[in-house]
Length: 113
Image (cartoon, rainbow, N blue to C red; front, side, top):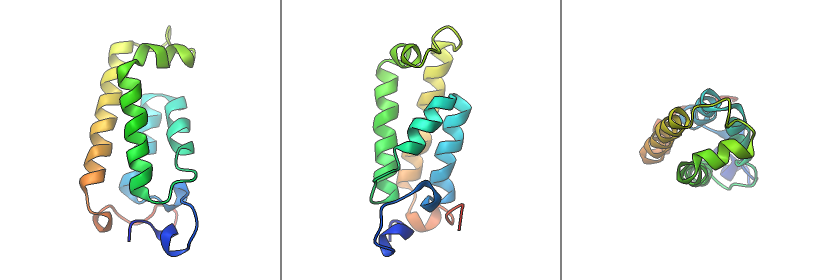
């Protein structure tokens, strides 16, 4: 099974995420507060945890292509060092890719069971 919500026949919510997947949201907050919000909101409507994680990877790759534009859009360009931000996003993407390669049953229990 790829998500507790599949068994319940409903869309996924961040409460359904395993410990490892939910850690993605926590780490995003360490990078930038709005990134946490964007990633958390992206879970809405996803069918499975892997769908969520693949979507997060897309978001992060898009940011890596133009980190300066992302920071400018959220009015953080003058507050956040672009190089540091880019490195932090790359580390977060590596974490997400690691979670995706980890079997679901080894990711831990959902944080809010």
